[in-house]
Image (cartoon, rainbow, N blue to C red; front, side, top):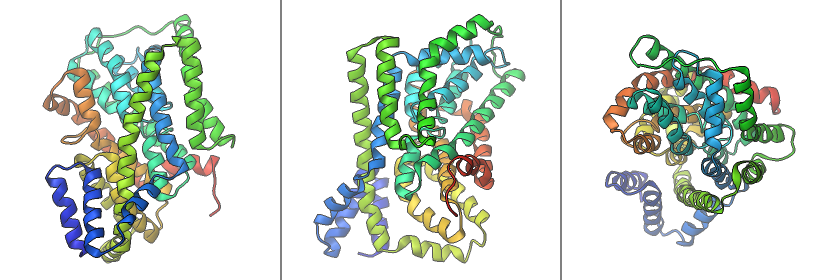
Length: 429
């Protein structure tokens, strides 16, 4: 079976609407049968693809996000963010972004942010007099910060695929994530200041109010401190840190926010469902990636591109363009498993740092989560806000611009990503 036929089968099934995981499994199974390879390779490669200690972090971070949404932690986070920035022009728009930054330090999931914290944010903004489209647009855009700021489920998967340090990737995502937040806040300020979006003026919080909200949110705020502090101190690995955060949230939730066995069961069930779908994609990609490797497709592509691309900057520009296009049509994890092997070959050939590349990939791919036709965060916010795709997409246009600018800055200035990893977790060069 030639590589051309293999690719035609894969893309043909995608066009017909088959889910990505099943498309990879089906095309891989046909390839194995046609070429006469042992059928057992399908199950061996699939099971071996998810036999990784680092992947244990995925269900744990998902569970952490679900627990926080179920136990009412999100309301306290939103209230604390409110007393910090509600007085700035744009009011609750800025609160929305800052709350997502805080929540990102505990969950690592854009969908958890949009579905859990987003419901609180949209309700509060609409009650305060903000338009439905603006409330939904800020919520969708700010939810993309979740997988950039550590911890990040997407960076865990990239670290597994690229065999890169998850700790360094976590640190690498911190500054780019804050840059995205700053860019979104600038857009909110401009839209309100120019009168394009109405926003009621809100009073500056008093010091007693700030202290009260801080103490109420402190247990939640300590989660990212424990996580990153433990990793940097060498107390536990990023994977072990995910378990520590879940245990911490369970203890704090039971004694501070109130114990509810039904909420915990719902959080567990949600984490199991999402983990199953995520690991199915990774297992299928293991077989698919093995076939791609024995066909030497990445090597052939690199050899072809070396004649066209003569500098790392040109390679990075091509990567950004590919990611923006692919992100519109594929779910992030599925796109990762397809693109990372080829991108790694290019990175090694052109001496591009793989931590820098990983963060660049995640920042750029997050734009795809809020663009049609396959944007998971877009659909989540549409469901929460009860708003149409056209209305929401038009409201998101200024935020798309801001995120593309940040993605280009991260892509062409590696020091933005590598400053913290090189400072706090240096590796021998």
